[in-house]
Length: 175
Image (cartoon, rainbow, N blue to C red; front, side):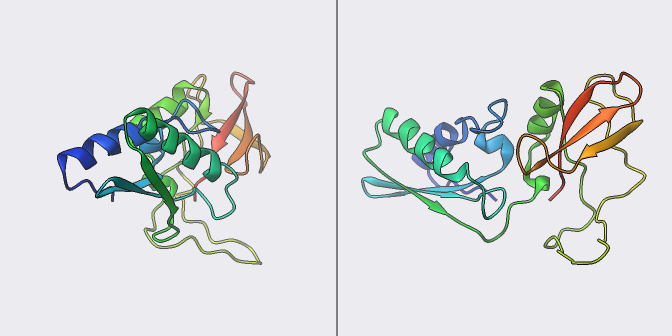
């Protein structure tokens, strides 16, 4: 999904992609999958960034951090555009990003079994996740976990507890 047609664009994509996520600094924006494109337009650089959800409060911090990183790299004019389509999905998190989440003590999102948009319903919800795929404890690996709260430190995470080691942990919710 990320584009980089020239050597300079590829280099700037690497620089912008290395910026840590402000809410999950263990992940870079590339590993989170929110950095969509970097284009060089003369002396200016345009960056496309997709928020994890439309109301994500971190998008401004991400944009500022990308601008700072590119300015530090010698780029004078940077424009960061918020791009909503195609929408970000937890499937956009790289395998390295998933490993880092787990190492950091956050259960990574499970892989969705539907590549389309996430359906929002007012009644009982249709799950896009294979219910036989449990949320595993990032501390001990047990599949015996329970949901404590649908929301945790950020809207994109739920709070769970392992029934084996008894440790609470965040679970990055599937979107």
